[in-house]
Image (cartoon, rainbow, N blue to C red; front, side):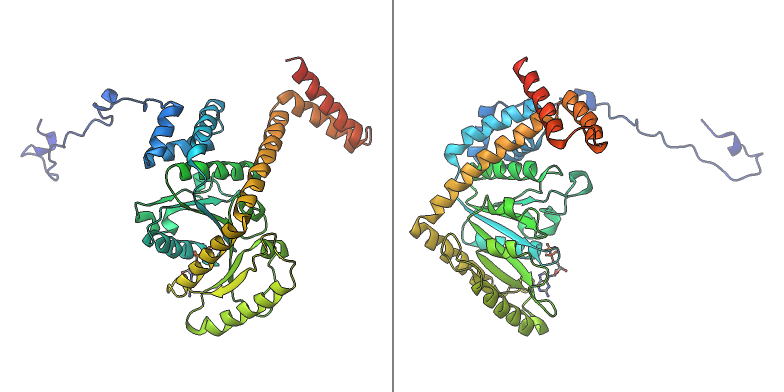
Length: 366
Ligand code: GDP
């Protein structure tokens, strides 16, 4: 229809007819299936073993889900994948933020792929919130690796208890191994929280350090150094080379004072540059030497057995806690008891006993 203002009598500007706008709702949308048909545990296992990355990703999502139904399927999938798992090198990588973990994982990863391996990069970061973008394992942080078809990168399971986050990563390792990834990196931020968890699921633990100013050992938790099978000083490039070498010497001296490691392997200290890709072969040779050594002594299997035991106990701990704290009645009683304890009306011990008795009675009467 002509616009009334286009009348030749009209004195104002001309206005053209508008363009018919598209419907805001896509009319074809309703014909699309809403949901993916749900897979059975056997479908997941088949997909994983056949190296279907999309199915592997979906199975990991199930592991990470808190829904009970998902957990039940996930546990069955893990159980069925176990016979295909275990055949990998599991390498933990830690270092303070800024030490160069992502840069290094990118180049170490490419190095591993060039040797014909398949690599999964996982992460443990209990502080990460998936919705805000995980700070760890984020694909954009490993630019080169994320474009490689033989690399599977998965961010840290989103925030939860450290035990819960770590268990999910541990279970994801099983699925990745069943999917044929023979090298697994597990990254964590070296700030003294999650290292023990990572250490308990890897064969080799790599600590990335920087040459700082003054006392090189300052701020590094002794416990983390004790766990390390290798310490590498990153950013050994440009005018930082001398300082990096000095830091390496200081770390070597400090390590002499530590008790022997359970494997009797003497941790090595090396320098490299992740950014300029210098010394990468050296770091990898050290890791190869370590695996040759522990496979030769039998420590490789001993450690894996100890870890399997550890994870069984950890899982029991975690599930017991969850079963206890997830009951609203228990939580309500706990709150009452807290008040009584704070007001000096009851001792901590009898209050704890009352709450536990209440919990166990409820279990018995279920
Ligand atoms: P992350 O927080 O431990 O993951 O550390 P990043 O990998 O993000 O690195 C932190 C910063 O250090 C970035 O600006 C990197 O470009 C830089 N960086 C990493 N590796 C090297 C290196 O080998 N040499 C130099 N000069 N800079 C590096």
